[in-house]
Amino acid sequence: MSSSPFLNAISQVMRQKGYALKTEKTYLHWIKRFIFFHSKQHPQ
Image (cartoon, rainbow, N blue to C red; front, side):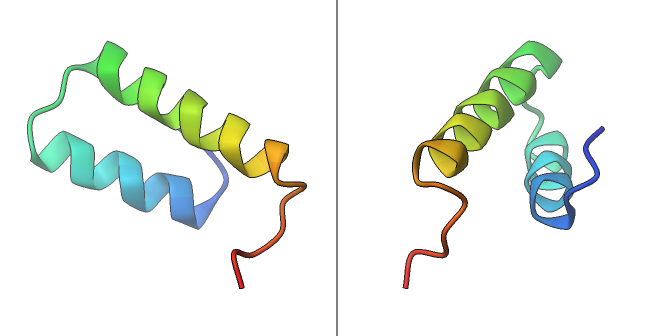
């Protein structure tokens, strides 16, 4: 789905837990926006 190993891992976990595809896409979108909002900097 995404080229990011981090986002791929999140996607796999959500699939294992049985999340709906639309929910998975929405959550990944929120995560991407959060990362870009913080200028792609690591939390440390």
